[in-house]
Length: 370
Image 1 (cartoon, rainbow, N blue to C red):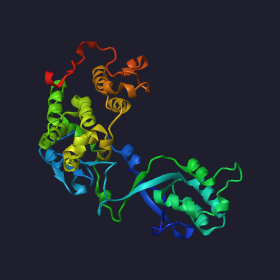
Image 2: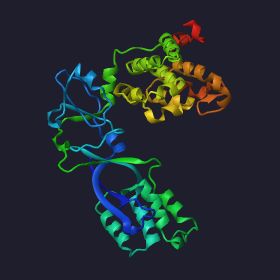
Image 3: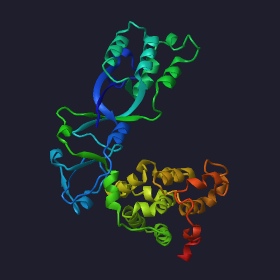
Image 4: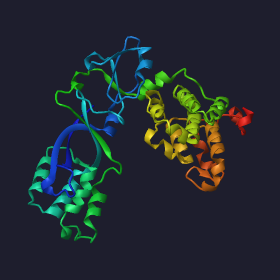
């Protein structure tokens, strides 16, 4: 993990405006969630003698881990450590978490500050002097951005060079990421320095734990559908438990189909959705529990299949069958024409392109054929 110095700009307290006098410049040494994910070690090889350490926020079910390996709460005792870059939480002994930050280009943002407040304003001078000793990227709290806009002098917001509204100019030129960024900083006397073992993404151990689990094929999928359609709420909970304990790789497309068809029934059971087992499933599928009830388009299915090397002929066949009832809404997309039917130019992208079609699955059209 390579920590770097960055500037974080936030307002002193929550006020209606955020004039320069109320802004705070903080120099923090840390790492963004995206950079953290890229910096992690890869290729964990399990060993029975392992002592595993888990960072706060991991969604790995510990009771499953303890069936095979020892778990330690002391970082200096760990032989391998696991972390979740997206869901890591603040810890008194490891990290502080800074959510909802917007990443901007430090130099471009400095130009905007100079234009709006003038080169001699103390905040501009302070900002530029600090920037010299930091990385050229700056994090600004998302709420601070709006307050800065309202506090800027009106006559400074019209850019003299091209006549554009200067706030929009700053935002368009300086922004490096359209999404908010999560930033992690080591707490004082952090125990991260005591961790001498490799640090892996939690997906590495989730995949190992997932091996030899229940395989959901077409027949099992139809059985689970019938259970989920029952008026007994206990049945949907049982379906969720079976899904959470399924072999994700071998059941991939059917898990997505169940989540799509029964999204409302599943999300109504928040306790079960937030259970560590189900959260582990969603992590492996690359899904966010907070967005489950929004559902997924056929293109989102393709994205997931490609990412997980599940973009096979049989999986595409199963997905197009599922979305056939919505064909009026799927006239033309990147991968499909109305039907939906996979565009011919994407045939060679299939993970099993060139393999005989004899292995295609037989789809049950009616529930009572199970």
